[in-house]
Image (cartoon, rainbow, N blue to C red):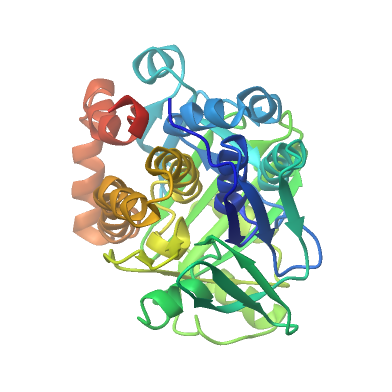
Length: 400
C-alpha cells in the first residue's frame, strides 16, 4: 500500500465531484486538506448523472460504494433509439452478464445525491476542511510553499495546489495559458418531472438516448424511479447568445418538429429558464507546474457521449492520492507519473466522445441509415468489446 501524507497541507480549488473525491483520497492518506469552493455553499445542480462500472473500485477506495448504491438506480439497458422513427438501434445490456463481465454495475443517480455522498465523506474526516465563498483567482508558487489568491482578497497557503475547478479552470489558465474551452455549437436544456409525466410506451427503468440529425434527448429515472430526468441537446447558431423562454421554446419546437412524438412530448416539458452551451477541450500535456496540478475537467474536459466526465475525475482523484503518498516529498515525480498514467486514457475518452457525438449521435440521411443497419447487426458480445477498454477496472499505482 502507498504511504502516508501526514504533515502535508494540500489545497484543492473546486468543490465538485473531482475536488471532493480528491479531498477524501488525500484525507485518508493523512494530509491536511482544504477545499476552496466559490459558491455560497457546497452543492450541485439538481439533475441526473450516469456512472460506469469503472468508477466503483474508486468508490471502494473512498469508502463510498454502499452510500452511492443506496441512492442509485441500476438500469437493465442503455438504449439508443432513432429519433425519427422511435425504433431501437442499439442497446448495452447492463444486467447480470454485464455485472459478470465488469464486476460492477452501471448506475444513474441524482447529482445532488452523489455530491452529498462525497461531502459527507469529506466531513467524516477531521483533517478535511470545506471552505465556501472561496473563489480561487490564481496562485504564487514559492520554493517551499504555494500561496493561493481568492477573489475577496484573502490568501491561503499550503504545500500543493490541485486545480479541480472545472472546464474554465483558473488554475489551468495559469499552468497552461491555452485560452477558453472549445464550443461545439450545441446547447442543452434539462428538466426533472414526476415519473407519471413520462411519455407512454418508453422504457421507464432504463437509460434511453434518442439520436437525431443535429439533436438528441437522453432520459432515465431517478430516486426509486419516482422522478424522470430529461436532457435535450441540439445544434444552434445561437449557442453563445442568451435568450428568453419564448425564444428557447421556439428553437426547441423547430428543431424537434419531425422527431418521434415521445420526443416532442418531452421537449414540451423542458425547463426554459436556463440553457447550457456545450464545450470541451482537446487533449494536452502539461497538467502540472511546480507545486500545482490539474485533475478532472480542468485537465481533460470531455463531451458527454460516453458519460465519463465524473468517472474520469474520480479515477484521477484516487490515482493522484496514491501517487502523492507513494512519492512522499517528491511531488514533481508524483505529478509527472500522474500525467503519464492518466493522459492516454482520458485523451481516448475525449476523442472517442467527439467521434460518437459527430458520427454516431447526430448524423443524418444515408449516414444515419448506414449507422442503424450496422449497429442493429451487432451482437451483445460485439457491443461489450467496444467498452472493455473503458469499463474494466484500472490498475492503481500501488498494484503496478
